[in-house]
Image 1 (cartoon, rainbow, N blue to C red):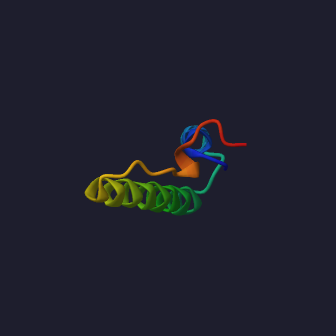
Image 2 (image 1 turned 90 degrees about the vertical axis):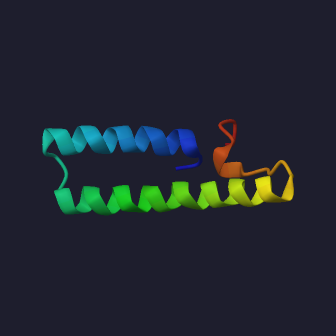
Length: 66
């Protein structure tokens, strides 16, 4: 997972696997929890930048990142 676009695709695949019953509910829950923590960390960075009135460069949010 390189960026937010990859995370979104991974979460969609996780949802499909959970719906199809091909992944354990507990494993899916832990993966979803981790994804939420990743997203929250990015949110904190954005909020901090807003308080400082700066435009942050957050590679994880850059869709073009390779």
